[in-house]
Amino acid sequence: MLKQLADKYRNAFFLWSLHKNPEVRQIVLSELTEKPENLMLTESFSYQTMVYLLRKAYIIMTDSGGVQEEASTFHKPLIILRETTERPEVVENGIGFLVGSDEKKIIKKFSSIYEDNKLYDNIAHTTNPFGDGKASERIRRFFMLDEIKRFIENFPSSSEETLNIGGKIDV
Image (cartoon, rainbow, N blue to C red; front, side):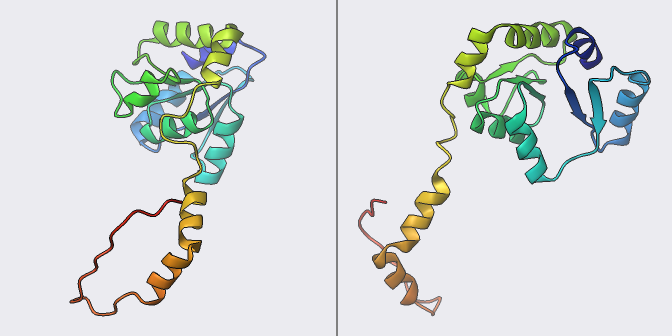
């Protein structure tokens, strides 16, 4: 299926990170003894490299729940190669499309996203269902509050003391 897409879309570059499972790898490698020049097989990436590549990708195809979350962060169209997902927000939000393992469905969905600029733009302008990506900044600001600094400095050292925090802190 990926070979067919690479043959059809010669101006696109396809990157396939091979699975660590030797049986899965063998299936892929035996199917791709001859592959188009615009299809590259690689080993797994570090997290930082994966995030960089996801940010640069045009369309992402995966069966990974974690990749579904990351793709949403970067507003990248996502073709989910599973029948169901534990990240239904991705599908409900319009970023992800469940296609399963049916090659015809995968090729059809990829083609529709790749060839339809309006559809692509609509996906790229959706909101991230997992937040706005600013949680770390909010946490940093929270810990910089004088009240929180004082609390941390005076935190009870005995495990027998009861911690009772009341009220709401706006960050």
